[in-house]
View 1 (cartoon, rainbow, N blue to C red):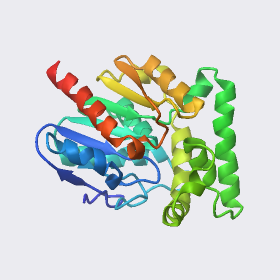
View 2 (view 1 turned 90 degrees about the horizontal axis):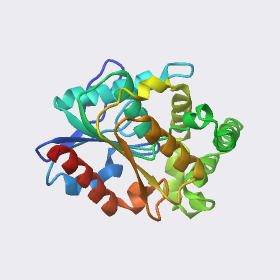
View 3 (view 1 turned 45 degrees about the horizontal axis):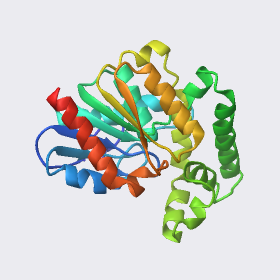
Length: 269
C-alpha cells in the first residue's frame, strides 16, 4: 500500500527481475490480473495496482475535476514505488490512463502493452462519425438510466463490450458487484472523454508498444485501436482470435504468452 497526499494507492508485488506493472480497467482491481501476473512472476518482478475508486485505491476524483490528472497521479505513485524502469501492461480504461501518462508525464518506460485501450475520442477526430455516435449514444443512455435510478443501468456498458446478454449471464454476485461500482465507472467515462490529446502528443511515445484487440470486440473498439496504432511511432496491432473486451478473463493464457513474447523481444533488442 502506498500513502499518497490524495489517498491510499493499492500496491502489490511478487517475483524478481525486470519490472512489469499491471493496470486494470474499470470494474476491476489488481487481482483481475492474477491469471496473467502469477505465471509471469516466475520470470519477472510483477506489480499490480487499482485505479481510483477500485480495490484499495481511494477515490480522488470529484464531479467537474480534472479526472485524468488524478488517475495519472495514481500510476505515477506506483511507478515511483517501483523505483525502476518498467514494462507497463494495461487494459481498457486503464490502458488509456497508461497511455496518457506516457504522453504527458514521460515516465521511465521500457515498453507498453495496451489491451483494448478505450481511445474512443480518436473516432471523432479521425472522422469515424457513425462509430463515434454509437459509443456516445451508449454512454449517454447508460448515464441517463443510472441518474434516473435504474439499478441495472450498467448493463448498457457490459453488453456493449461483451455482446447482448452478457450482463444477464453474470452470476448474481458479479451483477451486484458491477452495479455497486457504477458511480465509479461513470467517473471513468467522464475521465476518458475529457482526455483529448493533440496529434503530436502520440508521437512522443517512442517505446515499443503492442496494442491487442479482440476480433470479436465491438467495431468501434477495433477501429479506435487501429487509429491509435497509426498514430504511435513504434506500435503494432495484434488481433486476438475469438476474444472481446473481457479478454483478460477469457484468454488469460494466450495473453500471458503474448505479453511475455513482447517483453522478451524488447529486452533482447
